[in-house]
Length: 178
Length: 411
Image (cartoon, rainbow over all chains, first blue to last red; front, side, top):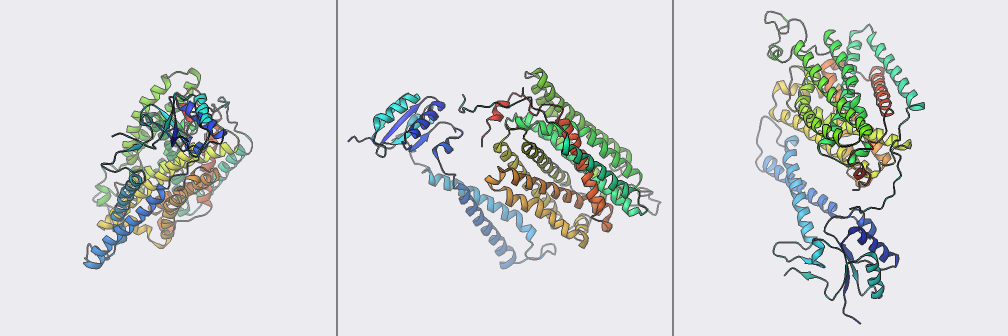
């Protein structure tokens, strides 16, 4: 029993990586994830990645911003210290629209960035965790969970057959930049 | 580097055949339109004649705006060197190449309306500019330097003439590209588009001040030009979408798929929001400052005979696209997009109706044979001209430098 946790197939060409995915899937080998230095069209559909739920977070933050923005205006302009401005009612809804709108998109944008950072473990001072250093440079990586897929020789053969330049057997999930 | 292994065997010399039901329906629509216009024009009641002129202006302006939006679309794609639209660019090109005809139609309507005093009577009547006349109107007289008949007509001819020339050449360059190949046409188109967009951007606001805003010459709004531009651009995009979907349903344009439709949907969604933004900016500034010579515009539109239509226009042009097009999947479905595009085209008819009618027929407005008939007539004329133009050339610019990228477009 080896201590290999992940098998990484490293490709120099995205077409060959896509071919590698097909080959592995045809042999019922589950793919943990793929890492590429640039977006590859159609890869999400091939890997069965579910659509991002970021829009839901955006909607919630936007809704929160709407409520906060409107409450701020209502409290200051209409409730706490109503003033007669140009004979307008103390709650002139059209005038409330710009500020409410701005607070909505402000919280929506900030909330989306925060959610994205939180979800991807990115925040200042955090050393990024990656499975292969060259995936951000010039290599296209297929990662396979070695414990879920027992036949390592088959994986090795399939990856090399598809054109993998290198196959790594990693005992740790992440390598670090440190 | 090709990351795709698509096998496409599209027929790039495919041409649309304009015949059968489509041709018959568009011709019948033109006849119906002429009948409705004749019915209005020959009426013994002055107000009916005036109402017909107002409707002619509405549809003539709409027609010209949609064609101009086609030219704007073509120019925008060239300047941004966009690839996604290469497969469907023949539709806006066909719209652009009939802009000269549309401009001529609008010019005749505007000229006749002006001389018969059926349109623009707020600033074009005897004695308005003469301090000794009982008709003297100080506000309008103050605008005489801009708002006078020769200046008005010269601007109309100059603006629409230059748009027409640019539009016609832009379409022509692409048709030449089919025959000659190479990058010469594309590069020429790029340069010409850059000039056209500057000319168009600076003059369309003034053009809409003249054509539509001067109907109520006492009132003015600097937002009006952008408001009209937004309406023009949204309705142009909707027309492109409708033609594209109907062509696809008829079995043409196999190379255009849901990804291209999605992009059109995003543009329609975004610019419907932009339309609302400009509409609201105009409304809110007038509401906030509460100056009588500005509020008069909305005062008229808050009268009982307009109020319902006024709010309906906001519901159709803002709420409907907001709810229907925010979803990704709906933007990729032909029937949903067809529904939204047609709804928005009706919505912008209503938008123009709200802009034009209070300044022309005012409380005598109506909705009947003249309105529906004129609209049908112009839709028929537009369909006939555009589809006829479309049938003259291949449905795809086969030598377009980015055509291959357009075929692989994926979002």
